[in-house]
Image (cartoon, rainbow, N blue to C red; front, side):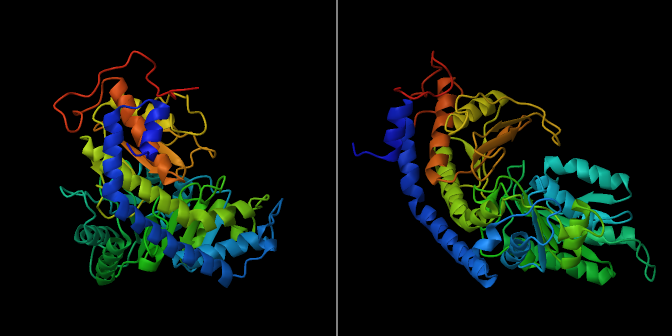
Length: 465
């Protein structure tokens, strides 16, 4: 038979023939969709290149500062580039922001105070944000979550209704003075729920309806969007669709696989300034923050980000088709719209999650022989298993898997600086399920069950030294 990437993989890792055949069919099925993601990446690349040129980036911008970090030309220019790209008045891009959770914590604290109402329009927020919301509640902020309902989709009318309900709390009677403002929080990605991600046009419709409801009641509305995993997936970002503040991580999409740490906040200038003061101190704000020689990596990573995101989307599209053809439940399906780089797969039981994670880990360039297990992580209520042999700790734009060990036992794949990396990872993940007897279906094209447990190690190993 003609050689293919998947046959090379099968020979090296000694994989069952039926997985190769399923992979080849999935590749053929998704080839056009993968090419479309390359076109999305090309358009995003042009936006990034224009922003660099419009801000006049020179070699001097790639240098860094120490100490206080005053007058850091590269840092301040990078702030303006992010503001341009995100359709925002201002941006704060700092290595001192250690994660997406940290960036979103700054956003929420900048937007919400005692007496305000925080409305989560996309159901339960991501696990690691719950402690921050609890702290806000402890300081007098009221919280209202909008159930997603049977469709599990963001419903603009339900969100507008929740804003109206919150307005009654703040201003209970006609003519009475308001007692605070409403902060509407929207999460762009699926988080740890197998629900559709939220495309920017849907966010725009939701924000517009929420603002209309707030205006009718005379209450101020501030909209904060969790932009993690969504940057450069669509042709515009949430600030251009009406969001007041967005936040995200540089070791996800916008870091392009090069940023070693960092996060960003972008949006209304007054809110960004408030977030900067929360990061440093009142009076200091964004005027300090040494870059310690990292500017080149942050600039170059941003320049490469569209390519990295395009590769991640192509890999996720293949993964959805491949896994669904083998009997797995997936979200989204390969031909559905995507607003983030995450591919969710239903595995049904904790043993299957751990086995699939071992297979994904076996595809890693770093710590490929490690065996992921569930553990308690800061900010998470359940044990979480993570597979990520990455060059940067926790870098989701590289290849990674994470899953809370709780029903209904879904795992969440994301990243892959090469689309081939995600393709390899899902092959090895399923191969591991086959090896330990947890493969859920039958061998495609036959009436025979897939092979039972292998006697050798459950971690996939190369077939030759």
